[in-house]
Structures are given as C-alpha cells and as structure tokens.
Length: 67
Image 1 (cartoon, rainbow, N blue to C red):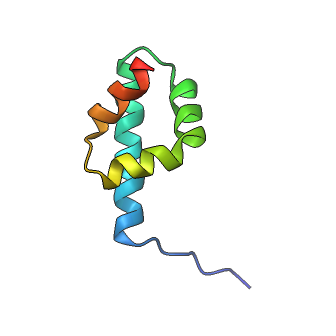
Image 2 (tube, rainbow, N blue to C red; image 1 turned 90 degrees about the vertical axis):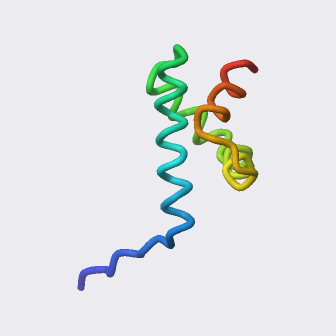
C-alpha cells in the first residue's frame, strides 16, 4: 500500500524556498554548495528565526558569511 505524501503548509514551503535563496547567496559569497547546505542544516533554528524576523535571504547569508 502506497503511503500518501505529506503535504507541507504554505509557511513551511516559504521557509524552504527562503533557505534555498540563502544557499545561493552563500555560494555567491564564496562558500561551496556543500558548505552552504551543511551550514543551513546545522543552523536551521537560527535561520528560521531570521526568516520570521523578516530578514531577506541575502541579509541572512551576509550575517553567516561575516561570522
């Protein structure tokens, strides 16, 4: 019996797309794609806070790159 795919709510989808944009800005800033993905996985709680605080993906990436 096939499992029904879980549907994500709009807010979760927006966060995922926001993180994808953060990843692209991290790569543009000099990180490898693997480094950018690892950073997002390890710092997702902080990134989620930044998302809800209204930061743009570019602002979040710049903060990460300046650390």
